Amino acid sequence: MSLDGEHQPFLPGTPRRPSKGAARACFPNLIVFIVTSLLWLSAIFIALDSKEEFRDGSANNGAGHRHNVTSGATLLTCGNSQAEARSLGCKYDPFLNHWVPQPCYDDEWIAEYEDDGSWGAFANEDLTHRLTTKEMEDSDFYYTSLRDHINHCAKMWNKQFWALYEERRALDTIIASPGHTEHCAQFLVDALDANETQATKTYVGFAGCWIR
Image (cartoon, rainbow, N blue to C red):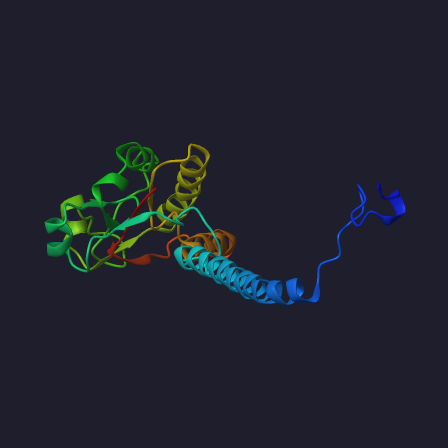
């Protein structure tokens, strides 16, 4: 004797309601799924936070914690003395007034700076005892003219622009320094009211070189 459709226990297309026993069996699996998902979400958030902290830390190169042109770059240094600078293969740059690592030593910019004719260093504040380049690099400090200081700052901005525009791989720490840029900006403003015979006491420094 055949059954009517209304008496068939499982009609086509009709969802089967799980028994209470089946629901209880699935409950532990559901708990495991939820806990596992929460653990993965926590791991993802921790990884994202760590990545952000690493990016900020790598940008801490003279411009706070912001991303900048030195982020991820390798820094070469010249130490803190003439002897150490020479031992590290650094060269004295009269344009920068600093010893710099070889990759950041730029003959073209030094020549352009010297073409102005005002460049030069003196042993005395009266600017009468001229020093040679060799004497400059062996000194702790020397004096320069107001015109030379203006020329230095103007040429530094030119060098900074072309280094960024051409995406140079090597950047010295002077053109990459916010402090030096702010100094030159303020100096050029103040130079309008400065005494033309006023000398600038310049200390020989030891710069670094960022390699990108």
